Image (tube, rainbow, N blue to C red; front, side, top):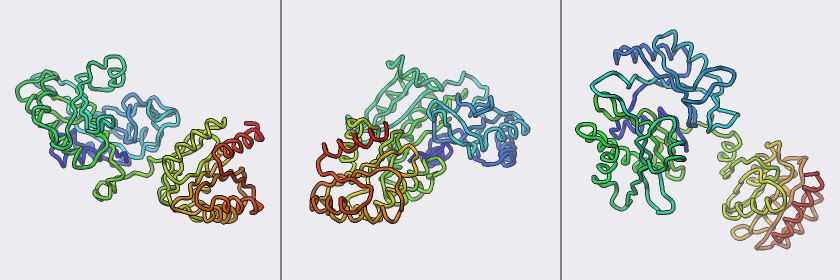
Amino acid sequence: MNIHEYQGKEILKKYGVRIQDGIVVDTPERAVEAYRSIAERTGSKFVVVKSQIHAGGRGKGQIQGLEQRGVQVAKSPDQVREIATNLLGNVLVTHQTGPEGKKVNKIFLAEDAYYPGASEPKEYYISILLDRAKGCPVIMASTEGGMDIEEVAEHTPEKIIKEWVDPRVGLQGFQARKIAFAFGLSGNAFKEMVKFITSLYTAYWESDASMFEINPVLKTSDDKIMAIDAKVNLDDNALIRHPELAIMRDTNEEDPLEVEAGESNLNYVKLDGNVGCMVNGAGLAMGTMDLIKLSGGEPANFLDVGGGANAKTVEAGFRIILKDPNVKAILINIFGGIVRCDRVATGVVEAYKAIGNIPVPIIVRLQGTNAEEGARIINESGLKVYSAIEFKEAAAKVTEVLKSLGL
């Protein structure tokens, strides 16, 4: 589950990580109030106005139809009002959102962290995520923090420092010091960075996160270390242990069909193809998507209805798949291990009748317990549904249907 920057900073603050603090608002009027509150508290007239969407690259992103960036600096109430008016309710396009962009519903007014002092501010990059190949968390760090970190990773990967953490013992002090040394820090800045990395890892581990990315990590002009940004992804499977984090979910940032599927306990991911698929089991779903590709089609979605497919779940799956206008055919691929194929077939027929006229052909491949009986139920239903038992047979029917549609 992705969360917004301001929410990620709330988690960091809880674990003692110094952050660039601020106030989140959803109207220009509240933005002006927040500006005055921050200016009074910090004594600085500068604030950073940051769009809150689930995507990176906001600093370089642009509001559709306006020459406005997703992150801007303001130094007066009037400027804040103007920027907030341009951002809120409009669509921000970044390299991560694609051309469709994301609507900005909230903005975060952050206090000035680039104030003058004894030394020059310096930006770093630090992230913590799971290295699936090694089966342990890895801390990735670089002296080249800021908006161009992707280019650093692509063109100068040697500037990326990696430190793997044994989950059995956790982050060790020498590992945090090793990164701080690699950054070339000394004195108070060194101590601050060690504390920052240690607290950041604790936040990552105890919140059951999939990723914490802080870009940039700022060494201020008076040698404080703070998180200027926070991109956080939480492990969905662990949210049952963190109800205080589960409520941070913002469904406005998610695909509406994926949200609807979740409410029906279906695992759904929308894709760009023309053949909808409904399968029980994630592994079989991946195989089915390969089957669709081999048949000349493109999968329109990943949809796992789980082991207990019945009329209710099949109907919910149909309704979600059919909301995608690109779907020209549907392939249902069920292995009858936990559930009998004849029950699934009956469920498909009942769901079809409950929905009414389904405008696209449906291929149902049933294999497992009572597969022949399931095929008989499908074939005798009188509906626009084609049965198959073997994988090759299902593939042939998908190809046949696509050709009949001129695809």
